[in-house]
Image 1: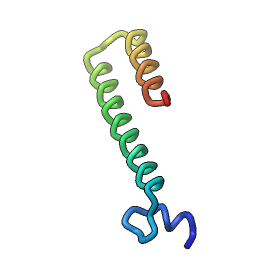
Image 2 (image 1 turned 180 degrees about the vertical axis):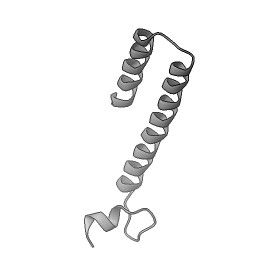
Image 3 (image 1 turned 60 degrees about the horizontal axis):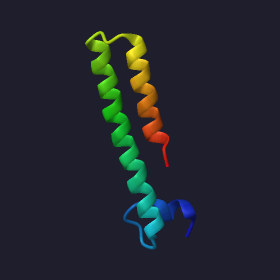
Length: 66
C-alpha cells in the first residue's frame, strides 16, 4: 500500500500519526479562515493599515508557532 493512499482518512491501515496529522491540518485551516474573516472585518471597519498589519503579524505567529 502506498503512503499516499494510507493517508486518506477512512482507509484501512490508517495510523494514529496520519489521523493526528490531518486533525492538525484541519485545525490550522479553520484558524486561518477565522483569521481571514477577522482581517476582512477590520478592513471593512476601516482600521488603520498599521494596526491591521500588527494583527496580521500576530496571527501569522500564532499559526506558525510549534
